[in-house]
Image 1: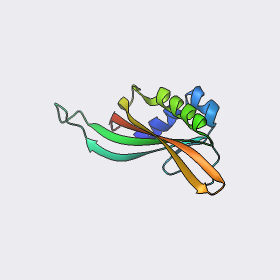
Image 2: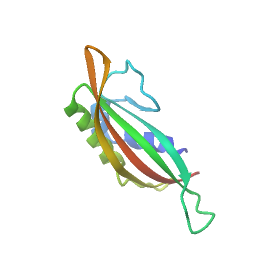
Image 3: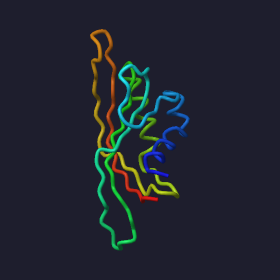
Image 4: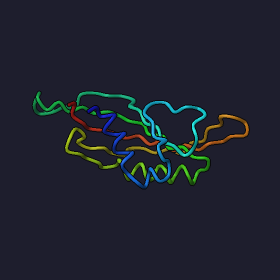
Length: 130
């Protein structure tokens, strides 16, 4: 199982998040005409993590998660559920730790009549490759 699929599984198993976004959780870029609210995530960088032994195989990645909604309050509610699902999460398979390191409120104008809100969160993810 890849770290991406583990992140996706974690996001989709948290009922507080799926109650808000249903199945609109995607890896990679989000489609322009996709309905709100929704979540997308992708890794912006990856590097080997310094370890005491060569067999540790720990990697560190920086991940961006974007929470979208039609209003700021909705985007903040989605982002809060994303943080509840991911921040300080560890599992028995490959994820050693996930830490929220930054959060920004943004707006996006796709069309003159359609303003959507986005909360961007950045996470550090320590994981082992399986």
